[in-house]
Length: 343
Image 1 (tube, helix red, strand yellow):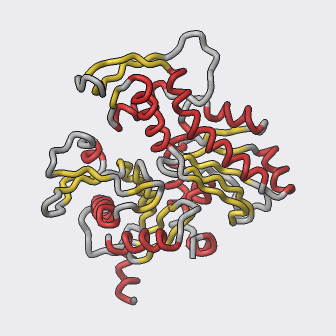
Image 2 (cartoon, helix red, strand yellow; image 1 turned 30 degrees about the vertical axis):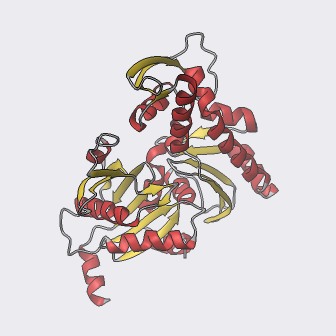
Image 3 (cartoon, one colour; image 1 turned 60 degrees about the horizontal axis):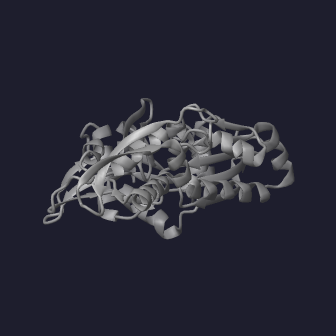
């Protein structure tokens, strides 16, 4: 224990947003030093890691039979324990400049609906990667701190964190979560909906990378009322002839494809508002709903939520980094961290 504390003096304490789509690492005193996709490529025969992060993502859908590309996080939690361990080891080593003898204190952001078994898995993976102490912090709380909401005040703050695997909706007051609801719907479900729609409508099979490009390029949550519709040429494999071909799609079709996951997110927000105590609901009318996470960047999603709830909706300045910034701030406020961390 004493030895651990001594090593702590030389370590770079880390905050990690272990996301389904991307993993971000924040180092005390330096800020965000790592933002890479949560992908690991391993060899099937000897389970050796070939690549992690950005390099691994470029290999998605393009690997030969003896190599496998894995996304170890599914729906915001660990789906493949070994691959997650390898990924964390890689990120911690990269950040620590190979000073592997130094044990960092690590704070990890996790979805609010996480089970005790899933919490244990995250802690074990972080400890196996060389962490000295591991704290878990709920992502909506971290996102609220990251975007600068006054979470310590006796007033209602509503945050909607739309990530890759989960959407977390929480009402926060006095350093605590008054009500939270997490649904396993996020950017990945949106991608799956686009893929299924194109397969059903055009008999065309497209890959993950193409689907993500479509979502970012012409995806939208509501009609902007512009006469000129955005179009995009996409390439894939024809399911009938088996031959590669190109088709042109427009934003209306993609909006139709995205309607199901977006409606689930809207429903979750409405349920959270129904369960908010009246005094805090009054604060939300004044302050509005804050959107964070990658899904907040979907065009028109703020406008749609505003239409459906009649409340002000604000998109965070940097929605992608909200969680990791919030978790990072806790490295300097250990007293507050011990109060709000998942015990």
